[in-house]
Amino acid sequence: MSSKNDLVLVVEDNKASSDLMTYLLRAAGHTVMTCTDGADAIAIAGQERPRVIVMDLQLERMSGLEAAAVLAADPKLKAIPRIAVTAYAMVGDRDRVLKAGFQGYIAKPIEPTTFAAQIKAFFLPAAVRSPDGS
Image (cartoon, rainbow, N blue to C red):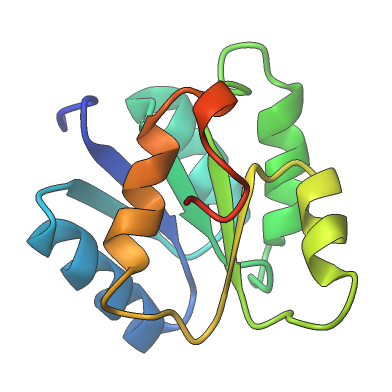
């Protein structure tokens, strides 16, 4: 079982994106688990209880938006911060994503020099962080 003190669950169906996020987070000292689907993310979250979930929105079987809603409705999992990492970057997308059950929003392409720090900010209590992880 992974260390829950630093475990980040990356939910991304694009292998290159998943590999990059995993590399950056591990280089910053985090333990990382990955999956490619929202339904799998819910199951892993229930078993492993990660500190943070980083999730794409466009996933094949269950979208990130659907998975975030399920996680937010589960009393045992709703406190886990969920961060959308997505190519949706049109006006209003950020607000829509935050209203759908995510606590954070990072637009793709991610910035490798700041990504791990943005995620690390979500390890802080909600009262002292902003929706972009700063």
